[in-house]
Length: 212
Image 1 (cartoon, rainbow, N blue to C red):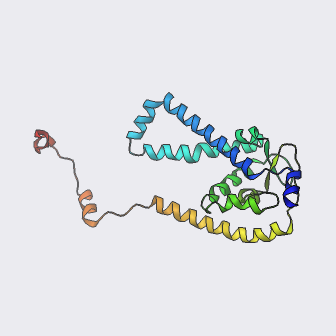
Image 2: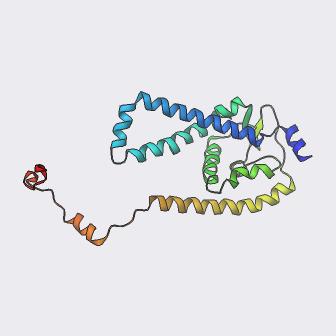
Image 3: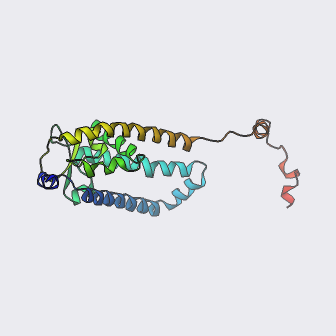
């Protein structure tokens, strides 16, 4: 009965949402590949620099996807993949496209969900309105085009009490992963002293290496 209700209400099915997300990912990858061939020399020069790889990783994994999803959620109520599969993102209270700060907050929770062992995404499987953590905490719903919203049932509310604790746990894991990723092992005292005392040679051509 619950499955039939969801079908009638038109909430975005899990498989449909997954396919929409994959379309978005493929679109971003196509943009990256195209940008690489158009700016191949600049990209290679950037990769050869000390922080080039870090800059490229930051833009391709964090900056560009966040701008893509947040702006399309806010301006259109759907990404390209969602448009293709007749899905729309709306605020639960108004039934309209999410405001900018709501779209931004939804993306933050979307990012946190990756550190929940996918529980944040799988939450839709046992939620009557098929809401993920990002939907729950941002007050949004993914619905089929032309459908209406509906109230959560008692089971959803009880389950979400557990879900809030899991969100907090995922946030701790995300912070820990980022701290470990940014951590740099300190140099040994001998190496640090050598770097402090290092000075460029005045006559490097006399050190014998140029004769090798």
